[in-house]
Each structure stands twice: as structure tokens, then as C-alpha cells.
Length: 267
Image (cartoon, rainbow, N blue to C red; front, side, top):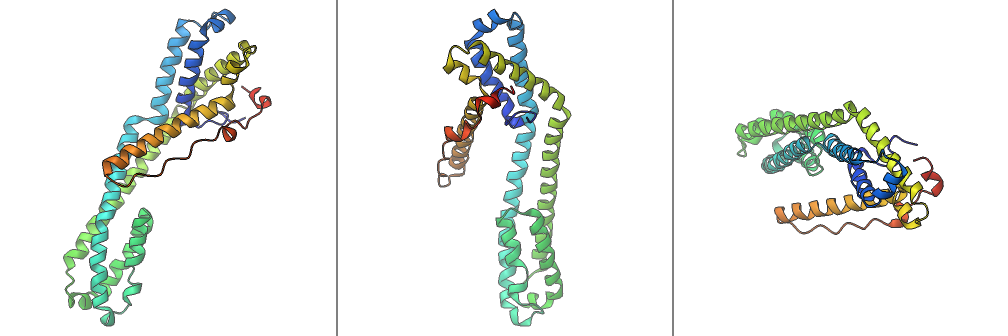
């Protein structure tokens, strides 16, 4: 069995919230089973849920990454017009250049921008810059100004720096989780104990006992996440004033509850 069964690290706080609500509903039975499930236990679990949410979701870093990504994409899109101008000059100077306009590299660079492939774009733009240098006189004869090439270079550097910053932030967020893996494992152990105990003490109430099964929890967690992501997408679309994205397909219960009762014994 994996460290967190079939849950991802970022799903653990949601698992904790669901189990906390189940525990509070059935608290009397838990307390009758063991005095360990007292007020201190509840307070500790609530604190752990908040702490793990900070570790796995890191709202501050996530917000920073989102801002950098937004600036990165905006900068990439701004380059499209510069490339469009360069393409126009290559078409006009086509017969005078050492390379065909179709082989100048603009088409490939614009494709990389559409794909949001920063590394690919940076590689392609180098080809463009080399071709500009080799065919500068022919391009100038058609109206090309060296300031356009300078602007392209500066905008490309900005994109490169933003991409590097984005990668560093993502790496920092991942490292934060790695550094606190022991805490995540202890939290998982506590959740596993609640799930195992709840299923055992509520065995006579089959419907309630089932709610403590991991297969059932997986279904609920993915359903919660699906709703959150769907809501985020609707908000982003509304803000951007774009055409609404198609609704996300609902999670099928049959797919989520694949694990048999035998798998539950590992809790």
C-alpha cells in the first residue's frame, strides 16, 4: 500500500475534513470505545488539518505562481505582434534574402507561444535572430527597423526570466512538502486510525460504516475537488469575459468505489 493509499498529498486536508465531520457525528460511539477521542483529540485534529492544508496547498506560494504564470502568458502573447511584423518584412524581402520567408523561423516560434512552450519558443527565436542578422540589409530595404529586433530580444528575456521564476517557485512548493513529509505521515496515521475505528465501531450500521471506507472517501474527495475546480473555472471565465467552458463531467461513483472490502483491511 502507498504512503497515502490512493490519495494525493493535496487531497489529505479534504480527507481530514470529511473524517472530522463523520467523527463529530459519531463522537459518542468513539468516546464509548476509547477515552482517547476527547476534546484534546478534536482540537489536535483540527489544528493538523489546517497545518497540512498550508503544507500541501501553500496558498501564498500558489498565489505567487499564479501571478507569475499570468504575467508570463501575457508577455508571450505580446510577442505575437512583433513576430507578425517580422513575418511581414520577410515576405516583402523574400526574393532578396539568403533564406526563404517560410524558413525564417517565425511560424515555429509562434506555434511554441500558442503551446505555452517557453523553452521551445526561446530556441526558435534564436533562429529568427540569426536570420535577421544574416539578412539585415534586405529587411531594412523593406522598412524593418533594428529597434524591432531589440524589442523582441528584450521581451524574450522577460519571458525567459518569468519562466525561470515560475520553475523556482514550483520547486520551492514541492520542497516544502518534501521537508514536512514526516508530519504528513503522522497526519495520515491519525486519519487511518479514525477510518479504521469508525468502520469497526459502526459495523452494525452498514451505511455509516461504509462512509469510513477509503473507497467511499476517495469518491467524496474527488467529488469535492471537482466542484472546487469547476467553480474556479467559471470564475476565471467570467472575469476574462470569455465563452464559458463546458461543464466538467461528473465523477462516476462506479469508478471511484473500485476497492473491495478486502482492500479496506489495510487501513
